[in-house]
Length: 95
Image: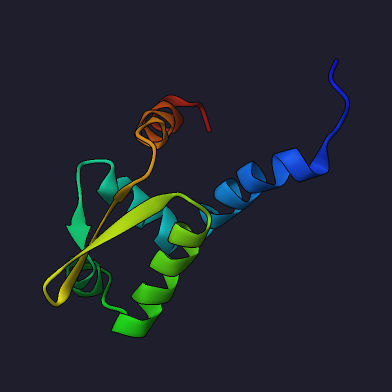
């Protein structure tokens, strides 16, 4: 067994912590199907723009998503496609 290295594991813990909010997890599920504009999330969720932007900032800071500005719009996509695979796996688990 390897020795516990908190500093090495913290980025992964932050990644999973960012997925711990229902709205952020829903956003990630939507991004599993491809990139989306922040305005689409605002409309679908029904929250204010600053609230959705904050959720996306948490996901971005944790390395879950990356963004790209196109004109006045910002588009988000998953930073690593394995997240989509993990979400599919979770759908099949017994509860």
